[in-house]
Image (cartoon, rainbow, N blue to C red):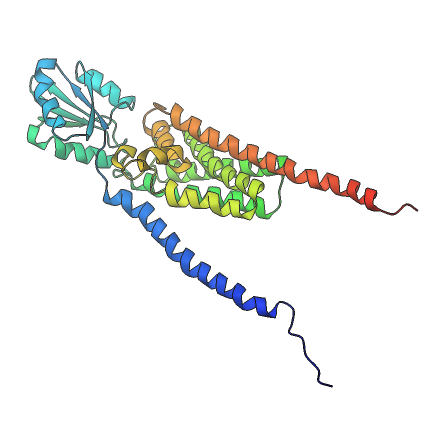
Length: 338
């Protein structure tokens, strides 16, 4: 009698399974690489002013020619009119405009703000070159230790990584409920303090109120960490990757930190300000260089991200506790009667 040896269970299925995984890797890796290249390179290659807020100051009869020249660059500038140079300076300090061209008896004067954006300040100098401004005034100047805003731009990625790391660690450690919230808030607070100690106290690239800067940096970190931990609590480990991917692929390159949101192609400029890196950068500029002017919008954006993220952590915890409470009851119902 011949003996037939059965194949190991699952042996025939392993080959197709490995093939599917290989195909998934070969497809997903190029797609992710292309998506990252598009998200980072597209805004950089299309950097140009789009409805950039710019002031024109002086008597209406004297500013007509200036406005006509600016209008020739269709769609580039959103012109705000002011009575005189003093009013234009106030608008720059309030972050209503990035700069202004003031028509004075001596001739046109260019008002800029390198603290708002060194790139925009340079752009305005080039745009007004044919007007031969008699003087250029940097109304709100960038710090001497960071005249090009390089340090502020470089801070976006580390803060995003800190938020992603905090949310991922809380998830991996299995912290739930109030313990998870305490860990996330505590970590964000310490990140804000440490970052301010480095950027303000040591490097002197931030010049505003110390605690306001620490609060801004901490809130930006909490917005990211809350989103990562919250989404992971709701949909599992995939939530960590999804939240981290959104922050890294879209939040960083679309933040406008290197130039300004109005210098990015749409909808990247708008979406970037809805995400934590963009809102955090705008808030930090406001509290550090402009005494908190125009800080309400980005502060509310970060607060909503943090609140929704922390709320998702609590909701995910509540949903997981329901099956845990139901299991003992079900077991008692199925157990035999002695």
